[in-house]
Image: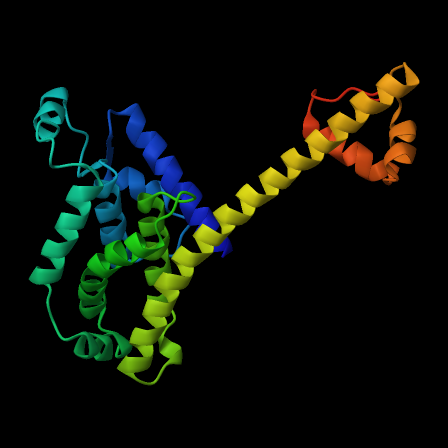
Amino acid sequence: MENRIIFREMLSEIKAASDVHGGQITKEEIREILSGMPLMEEHFALIYEYLAGQNIRVTEEREDSTQKVAAGTDGESGGLGAYLHRLLELAEESFEDEHALLGRVMRGDEAAKARLIESYLPLIGEAAGNFESEEVLLEDLIQEGNLGLLEALDSLGQFDSPAACSAHILNSINEAMAQVVMDSREKREADGNIVSRVNHLNEAVKNLERDLEHKVTAEELSAYLEMPLQEIRDILRMSGDQIELDGEK
């Protein structure tokens, strides 16, 4: 989980670096940013495809302005739609029986591993559509699914059959997407709970000040609400400058 968070932050760093140069970044720059991650060539191929889906041009060397214009003239060549279309092309180009590929991967065949990654990318795009919600963008779901795929491929050694490997890969992809949706949903619920608690405290402050006819203290509010003083102060910190009490900063 920690590696996934770090990798996600590195992808954000790659996007920021590409923005500085008009939406392009070199493979060398990508490798430098990701130098701390245990990635192989097939991982980088997957990353290049993902960045292309984000309309980021991955080049061997820095393009000049003329090349940038030429690369950006086709409105259909960038974005998520083009990324998914390219994934379907990759699946057709690299078609091979999945279990045969998995068997070769289990024997340490790196070429088979790269082909297997390509064959799973369209499935990730399709699966992301099943998890799409208001909480998470489709692009983010695809990114999480890609990370789940890479993690699964790095742990196939614990299984003794292609069928078990296939189930593990699919489970890892789906779990990665489900987790990011759950995390986003929990954060939204937590944010909503904070807003509710702040509003409740604010209303209590107004009522108590009206009754006592002076600016109230945290101690008075604690007694009025029968709420622990520390909880009062915790809510005050969450409210920012929205609630002011006598003697509290």
